[in-house]
Image 1 (tube, rainbow, N blue to C red):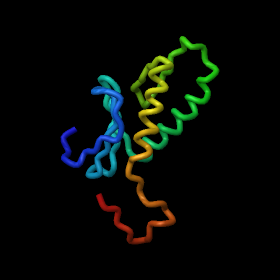
Image 2 (image 1 turned 90 degrees about the horizontal axis):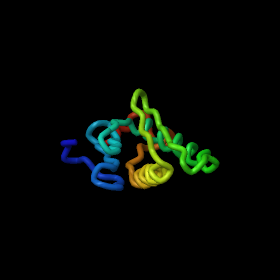
Image 3 (image 1 turned 45 degrees about the vertical axis):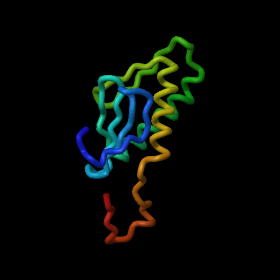
Image 4 (image 1 turned 180 degrees about the vertical axis):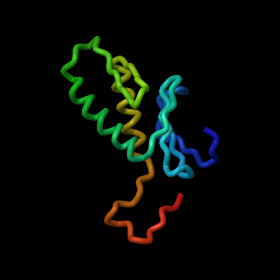
Length: 114
């Protein structure tokens, strides 16, 4: 990514990280090996919730079971250890990602600043 305001939110390795750009409406860049996904903040929050639920359900899976996450037509296949790393990466980014004001806090003429 080339924006000067791009902010690294969480890092696992050189090729596994999450960044955020306030210039582009808060787009979240999720890089996992050779794939980089561009997610709106709402989609990122949805992804965290889906992975939270999947991690909870996977406690009962056999140890050799692969975790496959489909996002549109992109699939990320992970071992159980990678799934736990992915989950920690998402949760780490969620803690530091800039959140928009709640609907109850935003007035009719509220302008969201970058």
